[in-house]
Amino acid sequence: MPEQHKQAPTDESAYRLPFEVEGVYSTSTICRKVENEARDYVDELLSDKLSIVRAHVRPGMLVDLCCATGGHLLDFSLLAEEAVGIDFSQPYIAQAKRDAAEQKVLNVRFLVGNAKALPLRDQSVGTLYSFSSLYVIPDIKGVFTELGRVLKPGGRAILDLQNSWSLNAFCVRRYADLAPSFPISVNQMFSLALENNFAIVEHRAFQILPLWAGKPKWLWPLLHPGWKRIMKRRVRGRMLDEWVSSSRLLKPFAARHLIVIEKA
Image 1 (cartoon, one colour):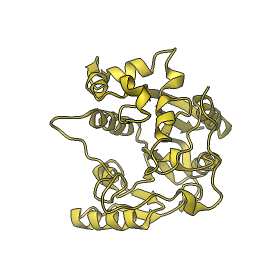
Image 2 (cartoon, helix red, strand yellow; image 1 turned 90 degrees about the vertical axis):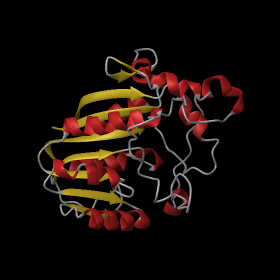
Image 3 (cartoon, one colour; image 1 turned 30 degrees about the vertical axis):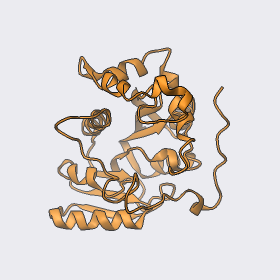
Image 4 (cartoon, helix red, strand yellow; image 1 turned 45 degrees about the vertical axis):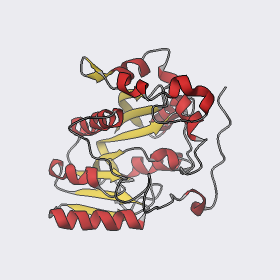
């Protein structure tokens, strides 16, 4: 059985990210770019996520929720007439604005905002996506409620969610330097979508193994870096990791679920 989930903190400062000069949350590294050569597993995964967004863009405003420094949204700027990046971090948004000005991208705005109280008008968004961030937000129900408010009828959201029943969720608790995470089960993901009148358009699963972790050490056979080289290999256009993670028996235990939902 999985460990009991952490109780969501009531003080927002309790789960703020540690903005370091160097490290996983640095403004210089938070938005990873896909490497064209010597691609790692994470490059292949990011490439798949970006492709999923491109495939599901709908007319209207394009929003990157929890955009960090906005690198992905700037790359997507030609997909929509208007694009908005939202993040609660002022340092990230400040860097995103500098990068947009430097690249002379005029149709993208960056706003400081709360994922559970989006600074957007009702039914103003055609497409929204969020990568690798929603699982650090306590009580994600509020995010789904906001998506229902801001998306147009027929609008779509591409959500990167972490499964509480995964080995990765077990391992990540061993890293004190990471922000606390609040993953949910796959059943909860689907329930939240249906409760808020969303249809499930696509569901893809990844990361059956904790492919970056090194703790706890007694799991070393599953934490060996060689697994990344195996799992990133592509079979009929998809990573071997996705084929394994999407199998009927293992899908409920895969760590990362990309769910595309559409507002009725």
